[in-house]
Length: 164
Image (tube, rainbow, N blue to C red; front, side):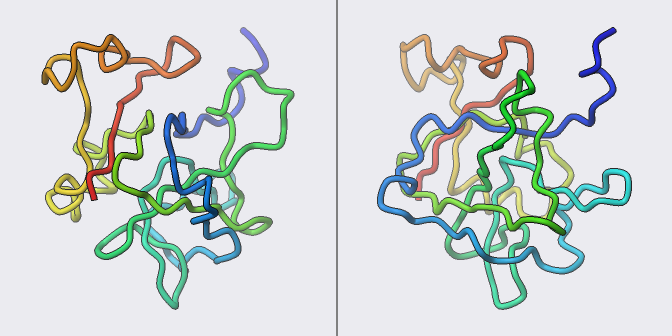
């Protein structure tokens, strides 16, 4: 058993093509809405995992419900651990970084937005704007769509594209 087995595990993404990072379509200084359903309680700390699809309002960052769609992607600064799955933002110490999604953006996520209970209330509307890409759906003959694990080669991952 390794020490990593004792660490909390979080959702994470691989930002394959997030065009919003290039022109700076990033929200980095907004707080998370009080009682946001996306917060994960970890030993009394409110943690915000990568990969959540969000909206912003006067009250702060929350689960996406309508309008402009953002993806939470905050790079971990700690390089001591072998994977992003041990990283999430502690909202008491840091604000999450959101990247505005632009049509054609692609990412791999450990979150299955169609089945995750956090997204149950918005799933039908959400899936009009993003598509899960798989080889089985014949979106492409490219082997890339057949990839079903994250970069670590072991964690189940889902490939998405933002349609607009």
